[in-house]
Image: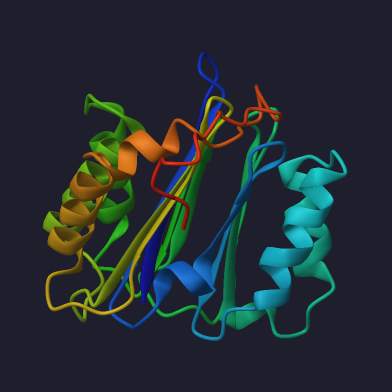
Length: 230
């Protein structure tokens, strides 16, 4: 039903994740993140919104990914129908796939990257997600879209795709949280949206927003200057 990727760049401190599915609103259901904590993806036949929120609380408290996954999945009697992947602030990763997940379903977890999928064509889709991200160049959002396209080409969700989303968290930039809740070509729509937010005037306004490495940033705005806030 869904495939997802969570990544961490040690050099830049950027967390970047993405997901796509043959259903609607994947961004709202699956991805969660915090620049001081990490990322998680909760998905499956009957995904738990509690898993994603509880995972972020535990990550913020400093828990390691493996401990978060073990704790949340072990306590949930409905876990057989769910899937969870977690990336912590140290780049550690872990994942869980319920026994009743629709085949093919699985997780590949390595340092600084974890991918997960269910109701996908085969494990090749997950391999393509990793390779697509690791072999691409450019900003994280472009690399994520490249990874999603690679996964789609490798077999995708067996139903095709209807929604896609990405989340990029940087210590030097505001969050980039892009969602295509429904489209006949969601990856094209996501790429188009990513291109638009990289253009003025929107991208210029982003430079005025406080970030982790400069929480107090507040530009002077003359009285005759147009208000560009959202």
